[in-house]
Length: 216
Image (cartoon, rainbow, N blue to C red; front, side, top):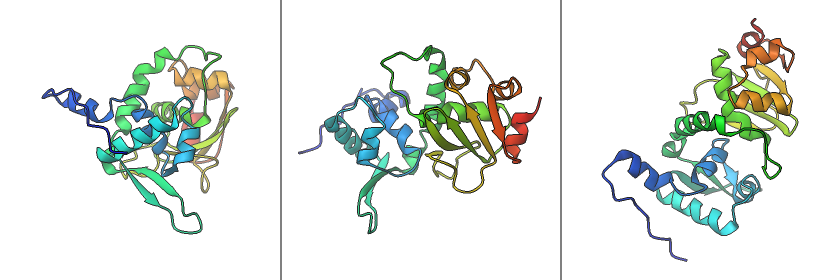
C-alpha cells in the first residue's frame, strides 16, 4: 500500500508547519506512549484504546516519514520490531507537557466511558514534582491502576521520561496515591507536598525527591 499524500495547511507559519507534522488525531498520543522508550506495535495498540489497527499503522508510517519516529528490529531472541522517538520526536515533550497543563482543567471527574492507564499520569505528575522541588531523580509511583516510574527533572538527553513497572534500581522516592488524590493532582487542584502533609499521599525514601515531598 502506497503512503498517503502528505496533507498541509500550505501556510507560511511555524505553527501551521508543526501541525502539518503532528496535527492528525492520535499522533501526539503516540508520542506520549513513546516517551516511555521503544514500544512494540502490539503494546502501542493496547495502550491506545479506541484506535483501529489501520489508523495506528498509518500514523506510525506518517511519523516515520516526518522524522518523528524510527522502526528497528530487536536482536534475538526477541526478534520483534519496535518504534521509538527520534531526537525530533523527543523534542515534543515540552509541547505535550504544555498541552497537558492547558487541558488539566478539562479533566473533571472521570466518566464511565473513560479508559485509564496508570502511566497516563506520568506527565502531570512530572509537572507536580517540579513544583514540589523534587530535583532530578526518579520517582516510583504506585496507583490503584498500577505502578510506573518517572524522571522528575529535565530529560534533555532524550532518554525515556517514564516507564511502566517499578523503577530500575533504587528510586529517589516512592509515592503512593489513590485515584481521587491522583486526579486532583493531575488537575492542578492539589500539590504533592500538601497531599503528603494531609495524609492523602504516602512517600518513602531518602533521596532529594522524598525529602522535598516531606517538607512542610
